[in-house]
Image 1 (cartoon, helix red, strand yellow):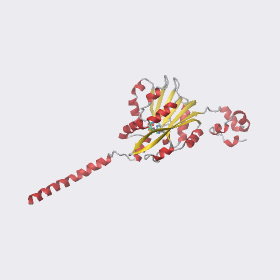
Image 2: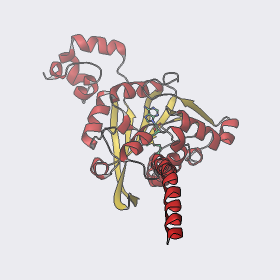
Image 3: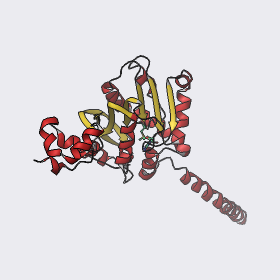
Image 4: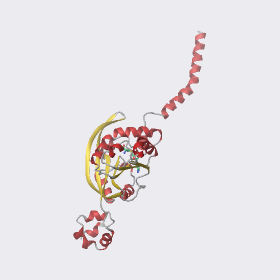
Length: 292
Ligand SMILES: C[S@@+](CC[C@H](N)C(=O)[O-])C[C@H]1O[C@@H](n2cnc3c(N)ncnc32)[C@H](O)[C@@H]1O
Protein backbone atom coordinates (compact mmCIF):
# COMPACT_ATOMS: atom_id res chain seq x y z
CA UNK A 1 0.00 0.00 0.00
CA UNK A 2 2.83 2.35 1.02
CA UNK A 3 4.52 1.60 -2.26
CA UNK A 4 1.43 2.57 -4.27
CA UNK A 5 0.95 5.77 -2.29
CA UNK A 6 4.55 6.79 -2.94
CA UNK A 7 4.09 6.06 -6.65
CA UNK A 8 0.89 8.14 -6.72
CA UNK A 9 2.60 11.15 -5.09
CA UNK A 10 5.56 10.85 -7.44
CA UNK A 11 3.25 10.98 -10.48
CA UNK A 12 1.26 13.84 -8.91
CA UNK A 13 4.50 15.83 -8.42
CA UNK A 14 5.51 15.18 -12.01
CA UNK A 15 2.11 16.44 -13.22
CA UNK A 16 2.50 19.61 -11.13
CA UNK A 17 5.87 20.22 -12.78
CA UNK A 18 4.19 19.92 -16.18
CA UNK A 19 1.45 22.44 -15.38
CA UNK A 20 3.45 25.60 -16.29
CA UNK A 21 4.41 23.98 -19.55
CA UNK A 22 0.78 23.10 -20.34
CA UNK A 23 -0.25 26.70 -19.54
CA UNK A 24 2.49 28.01 -21.82
CA UNK A 25 1.33 25.88 -24.77
CA UNK A 26 -2.27 26.89 -24.13
CA UNK A 27 -1.28 30.57 -24.33
CA UNK A 28 0.70 29.92 -27.47
CA UNK A 29 -2.32 28.25 -29.09
CA UNK A 30 -4.56 31.18 -28.12
CA UNK A 31 -2.09 33.60 -29.69
CA UNK A 32 -2.25 31.77 -33.00
CA UNK A 33 -5.97 31.22 -32.77
CA UNK A 34 -7.04 29.93 -36.20
CA UNK A 35 -10.41 31.76 -35.96
CA UNK A 36 -9.67 35.46 -36.47
CA UNK A 37 -12.03 38.01 -34.93
CA UNK A 38 -14.36 40.09 -37.16
CA UNK A 39 -12.35 43.23 -36.27
CA UNK A 40 -9.14 41.57 -37.38
CA UNK A 41 -10.67 40.50 -40.71
CA UNK A 42 -12.03 44.02 -41.28
CA UNK A 43 -8.56 45.50 -40.68
CA UNK A 44 -7.00 43.01 -43.05
CA UNK A 45 -9.57 43.66 -45.80
CA UNK A 46 -9.02 47.40 -45.44
CA UNK A 47 -5.23 47.07 -45.59
CA UNK A 48 -3.77 43.55 -45.67
CA UNK A 49 -0.55 43.31 -43.66
CA UNK A 50 1.63 40.92 -41.63
CA UNK A 51 1.64 37.12 -41.72
CA UNK A 52 -2.09 36.93 -42.52
CA UNK A 53 -1.83 39.10 -45.69
CA UNK A 54 -0.99 36.20 -48.04
CA UNK A 55 -4.00 34.18 -46.85
CA UNK A 56 -6.40 37.12 -47.06
CA UNK A 57 -5.20 37.87 -50.61
CA UNK A 58 -5.91 34.28 -51.68
CA UNK A 59 -9.32 34.21 -49.95
CA UNK A 60 -10.31 37.48 -51.67
CA UNK A 61 -9.47 35.95 -55.07
CA UNK A 62 -12.00 33.18 -54.41
CA UNK A 63 -14.77 35.23 -52.85
CA UNK A 64 -14.50 38.18 -55.27
CA UNK A 65 -14.10 36.22 -58.50
CA UNK A 66 -17.73 36.74 -59.57
CA UNK A 67 -17.61 40.46 -58.78
CA UNK A 68 -14.47 40.82 -60.91
CA UNK A 69 -16.24 38.96 -63.74
CA UNK A 70 -19.19 41.36 -63.49
CA UNK A 71 -16.96 44.45 -63.66
CA UNK A 72 -14.79 43.02 -66.45
CA UNK A 73 -17.93 42.32 -68.50
CA UNK A 74 -18.72 46.05 -68.39
CA UNK A 75 -15.16 47.29 -68.85
CA UNK A 76 -15.10 48.81 -72.34
CA UNK A 77 -11.52 48.89 -73.59
CA UNK A 78 -9.99 49.74 -76.96
CA UNK A 79 -6.57 48.81 -78.38
CA UNK A 80 -3.82 50.91 -76.84
CA UNK A 81 -5.90 52.12 -73.88
CA UNK A 82 -4.23 53.02 -70.57
CA UNK A 83 -6.11 51.43 -67.67
CA UNK A 84 -5.76 51.84 -63.90
CA UNK A 85 -6.90 49.46 -61.16
CA UNK A 86 -7.06 50.88 -57.62
CA UNK A 87 -6.74 48.40 -54.72
CA UNK A 88 -5.77 45.29 -56.68
CA UNK A 89 -5.16 42.91 -53.72
CA UNK A 90 -2.62 40.29 -54.85
CA UNK A 91 -3.20 41.15 -58.54
CA UNK A 92 -4.81 37.85 -59.47
CA UNK A 93 -7.05 39.29 -62.21
CA UNK A 94 -4.59 41.45 -64.20
CA UNK A 95 -4.18 38.80 -66.93
CA UNK A 96 -7.95 38.75 -67.58
CA UNK A 97 -8.00 42.54 -67.95
CA UNK A 98 -5.15 42.45 -70.45
CA UNK A 99 -7.13 39.98 -72.59
CA UNK A 100 -9.91 42.54 -73.10
CA UNK A 101 -8.13 44.39 -75.95
CA UNK A 102 -4.85 44.57 -77.87
CA UNK A 103 -1.85 46.58 -76.69
CA UNK A 104 -3.34 47.71 -73.39
CA UNK A 105 -1.11 49.28 -70.77
CA UNK A 106 -2.27 48.38 -67.29
CA UNK A 107 -1.39 50.29 -64.12
CA UNK A 108 -2.18 49.32 -60.55
CA UNK A 109 -1.97 51.13 -57.25
CA UNK A 110 -2.51 49.73 -53.74
CA UNK A 111 -1.48 51.21 -50.40
CA UNK A 112 -0.70 47.82 -48.82
CA UNK A 113 3.02 46.98 -49.06
CA UNK A 114 2.17 43.27 -48.62
CA UNK A 115 -0.29 43.31 -51.56
CA UNK A 116 2.10 45.21 -53.85
CA UNK A 117 4.82 42.66 -53.05
CA UNK A 118 2.48 39.69 -53.69
CA UNK A 119 1.09 41.20 -56.92
CA UNK A 120 4.60 41.94 -58.24
CA UNK A 121 5.56 38.33 -57.56
CA UNK A 122 2.37 36.91 -59.14
CA UNK A 123 2.72 39.08 -62.27
CA UNK A 124 6.48 39.21 -62.75
CA UNK A 125 6.11 38.22 -66.46
CA UNK A 126 3.65 40.99 -67.27
CA UNK A 127 5.85 43.56 -65.52
CA UNK A 128 8.95 42.33 -67.38
CA UNK A 129 7.09 42.62 -70.71
CA UNK A 130 6.18 46.22 -69.89
CA UNK A 131 2.43 45.48 -69.90
CA UNK A 132 1.91 46.19 -66.20
CA UNK A 133 3.14 48.91 -63.85
CA UNK A 134 2.47 48.52 -60.11
CA UNK A 135 2.91 51.23 -57.51
CA UNK A 136 2.38 51.49 -53.78
CA UNK A 137 0.22 54.48 -52.89
CA UNK A 138 -3.22 55.74 -52.04
CA UNK A 139 -6.00 56.77 -54.40
CA UNK A 140 -6.15 60.25 -52.87
CA UNK A 141 -2.58 60.95 -54.02
CA UNK A 142 -1.94 59.30 -57.36
CA UNK A 143 1.56 59.32 -58.86
CA UNK A 144 0.30 59.75 -62.44
CA UNK A 145 0.11 62.61 -64.93
CA UNK A 146 -3.20 64.42 -65.45
CA UNK A 147 -5.47 62.98 -68.15
CA UNK A 148 -3.48 59.72 -68.51
CA UNK A 149 -6.22 57.09 -68.25
CA UNK A 150 -8.95 55.93 -70.63
CA UNK A 151 -10.50 53.76 -67.91
CA UNK A 152 -10.17 53.32 -64.15
CA UNK A 153 -11.72 50.57 -62.04
CA UNK A 154 -11.76 49.41 -58.44
CA UNK A 155 -13.42 46.47 -56.73
CA UNK A 156 -14.30 46.39 -53.02
CA UNK A 157 -12.34 49.56 -52.34
CA UNK A 158 -14.69 52.52 -51.96
CA UNK A 159 -15.97 51.22 -48.57
CA UNK A 160 -12.59 52.29 -47.19
CA UNK A 161 -12.78 55.91 -48.36
CA UNK A 162 -13.48 57.95 -45.22
CA UNK A 163 -13.31 61.19 -47.24
CA UNK A 164 -14.44 60.18 -50.74
CA UNK A 165 -14.11 63.67 -52.26
CA UNK A 166 -10.31 63.66 -51.96
CA UNK A 167 -10.13 60.29 -53.76
CA UNK A 168 -12.62 61.20 -56.48
CA UNK A 169 -11.00 64.53 -57.28
CA UNK A 170 -7.65 62.82 -57.65
CA UNK A 171 -9.09 60.02 -59.80
CA UNK A 172 -10.89 62.60 -61.96
CA UNK A 173 -7.58 64.45 -62.42
CA UNK A 174 -5.80 61.42 -63.92
CA UNK A 175 -8.71 60.49 -66.24
CA UNK A 176 -9.20 61.77 -69.77
CA UNK A 177 -12.42 63.75 -70.29
CA UNK A 178 -15.13 61.27 -71.21
CA UNK A 179 -13.17 58.33 -69.67
CA UNK A 180 -15.07 55.82 -67.53
CA UNK A 181 -14.71 54.77 -63.91
CA UNK A 182 -16.05 51.29 -63.06
CA UNK A 183 -16.86 50.60 -59.41
CA UNK A 184 -17.49 47.06 -58.14
CA UNK A 185 -19.08 46.70 -54.70
CA UNK A 186 -21.52 44.57 -52.74
CA UNK A 187 -24.87 46.14 -51.98
CA UNK A 188 -25.32 47.97 -48.66
CA UNK A 189 -28.12 45.56 -47.60
CA UNK A 190 -25.83 42.55 -48.03
CA UNK A 191 -22.79 44.19 -46.44
CA UNK A 192 -24.77 45.12 -43.33
CA UNK A 193 -25.41 41.42 -42.69
CA UNK A 194 -21.78 40.24 -42.94
CA UNK A 195 -20.18 39.62 -39.51
CA UNK A 196 -16.83 41.24 -40.34
CA UNK A 197 -18.37 44.50 -41.51
CA UNK A 198 -17.39 46.85 -38.68
CA UNK A 199 -17.21 50.68 -38.59
CA UNK A 200 -13.98 50.34 -40.60
CA UNK A 201 -16.33 50.05 -43.61
CA UNK A 202 -18.24 53.07 -44.97
CA UNK A 203 -21.48 51.65 -46.34
CA UNK A 204 -23.39 53.81 -48.81
CA UNK A 205 -26.43 53.04 -50.95
CA UNK A 206 -26.65 53.66 -54.70
CA UNK A 207 -28.25 57.11 -54.32
CA UNK A 208 -25.58 58.29 -51.88
CA UNK A 209 -22.78 57.04 -54.12
CA UNK A 210 -24.37 58.62 -57.18
CA UNK A 211 -24.70 61.94 -55.35
CA UNK A 212 -21.11 61.99 -54.06
CA UNK A 213 -19.71 61.05 -57.47
CA UNK A 214 -21.86 63.67 -59.24
CA UNK A 215 -20.45 66.37 -56.92
CA UNK A 216 -16.99 65.43 -58.17
CA UNK A 217 -17.84 65.48 -61.86
CA UNK A 218 -18.81 61.85 -62.48
CA UNK A 219 -22.08 61.04 -64.20
CA UNK A 220 -23.70 57.67 -63.55
CA UNK A 221 -24.14 55.83 -66.86
CA UNK A 222 -25.25 52.41 -65.67
CA UNK A 223 -25.76 50.28 -62.57
CA UNK A 224 -26.02 46.52 -62.77
CA UNK A 225 -26.78 44.30 -59.82
CA UNK A 226 -26.17 40.54 -59.93
CA UNK A 227 -26.76 37.62 -57.58
CA UNK A 228 -23.45 35.93 -56.76
CA UNK A 229 -22.78 32.45 -55.34
CA UNK A 230 -23.41 32.40 -51.57
CA UNK A 231 -20.44 32.45 -49.17
CA UNK A 232 -19.95 30.68 -45.82
CA UNK A 233 -18.57 32.86 -43.00
CA UNK A 234 -18.07 31.40 -39.49
CA UNK A 235 -20.27 28.47 -40.53
CA UNK A 236 -23.22 30.63 -41.70
CA UNK A 237 -24.22 30.94 -45.36
CA UNK A 238 -24.76 34.46 -46.72
CA UNK A 239 -26.38 35.40 -50.03
CA UNK A 240 -24.26 37.83 -52.04
CA UNK A 241 -25.34 40.66 -54.33
CA UNK A 242 -22.65 42.30 -56.42
CA UNK A 243 -23.00 45.58 -58.22
CA UNK A 244 -21.12 47.33 -61.01
CA UNK A 245 -21.60 51.10 -61.27
CA UNK A 246 -20.27 52.78 -64.41
CA UNK A 247 -19.45 56.50 -64.26
CA UNK A 248 -18.25 58.88 -66.93
CA UNK A 249 -16.02 61.86 -66.26
CA UNK A 250 -17.94 64.86 -67.50
CA UNK A 251 -16.07 67.10 -69.91
CA UNK A 252 -15.09 70.32 -68.20
CA UNK A 253 -16.85 73.52 -69.16
CA UNK A 254 -14.26 75.81 -70.83
CA UNK A 255 -12.78 78.29 -68.36
CA UNK A 256 -13.76 81.37 -70.34
CA UNK A 257 -17.38 80.23 -70.53
CA UNK A 258 -17.33 79.48 -66.80
CA UNK A 259 -15.95 82.93 -66.04
CA UNK A 260 -18.77 84.51 -68.02
CA UNK A 261 -21.44 82.22 -66.55
CA UNK A 262 -20.42 83.13 -63.01
CA UNK A 263 -21.32 86.72 -63.82
CA UNK A 264 -24.23 86.38 -66.26
CA UNK A 265 -25.79 82.97 -65.61
CA UNK A 266 -29.35 84.06 -66.37
CA UNK A 267 -28.51 85.08 -69.96
CA UNK A 268 -26.73 81.92 -70.96
CA UNK A 269 -28.71 79.42 -68.99
CA UNK A 270 -31.47 78.58 -71.42
CA UNK A 271 -29.48 79.23 -74.54
CA UNK A 272 -26.48 77.02 -73.88
CA UNK A 273 -27.00 74.39 -71.26
CA UNK A 274 -30.05 72.21 -70.96
CA UNK A 275 -28.87 70.30 -67.92
CA UNK A 276 -27.03 73.30 -66.54
CA UNK A 277 -27.94 72.97 -62.86
CA UNK A 278 -26.14 69.64 -62.50
CA UNK A 279 -23.23 70.54 -64.77
CA UNK A 280 -22.61 73.82 -63.01
CA UNK A 281 -23.17 72.69 -59.43
CA UNK A 282 -19.98 70.66 -59.55
CA UNK A 283 -18.09 73.53 -61.14
CA UNK A 284 -18.74 75.57 -58.01
CA UNK A 285 -21.70 77.59 -59.28
CA UNK A 286 -24.66 78.04 -56.95
CA UNK A 287 -27.72 76.43 -58.53
CA UNK A 288 -30.08 79.21 -57.38
CA UNK A 289 -28.42 81.60 -59.85
CA UNK A 290 -29.78 79.45 -62.65
CA UNK A 291 -33.39 79.39 -61.52
CA UNK A 292 -34.54 82.25 -63.64
C1 LIG B 1 -11.02 44.39 -49.77
S1 LIG B 1 -9.52 44.46 -50.64
C2 LIG B 1 -10.07 44.15 -52.32
C3 LIG B 1 -8.99 43.57 -53.19
C4 LIG B 1 -9.47 43.22 -54.60
N1 LIG B 1 -9.82 44.38 -55.33
C5 LIG B 1 -10.65 42.27 -54.50
O1 LIG B 1 -11.79 42.70 -54.64
O2 LIG B 1 -10.41 41.07 -54.28
C6 LIG B 1 -9.18 46.18 -50.69
C7 LIG B 1 -7.83 46.47 -51.35
O3 LIG B 1 -7.76 47.84 -51.64
C8 LIG B 1 -6.60 48.41 -51.06
N2 LIG B 1 -6.98 49.79 -50.73
C9 LIG B 1 -7.96 50.21 -49.87
N3 LIG B 1 -8.03 51.55 -49.86
C10 LIG B 1 -7.09 52.00 -50.73
C11 LIG B 1 -6.68 53.29 -51.15
N4 LIG B 1 -7.23 54.39 -50.68
N5 LIG B 1 -5.69 53.39 -52.07
C12 LIG B 1 -5.09 52.27 -52.56
N6 LIG B 1 -5.43 51.02 -52.19
C13 LIG B 1 -6.42 50.89 -51.30
C14 LIG B 1 -6.26 47.51 -49.88
O4 LIG B 1 -4.91 47.56 -49.54
C15 LIG B 1 -6.67 46.15 -50.43
O5 LIG B 1 -5.64 45.55 -51.18
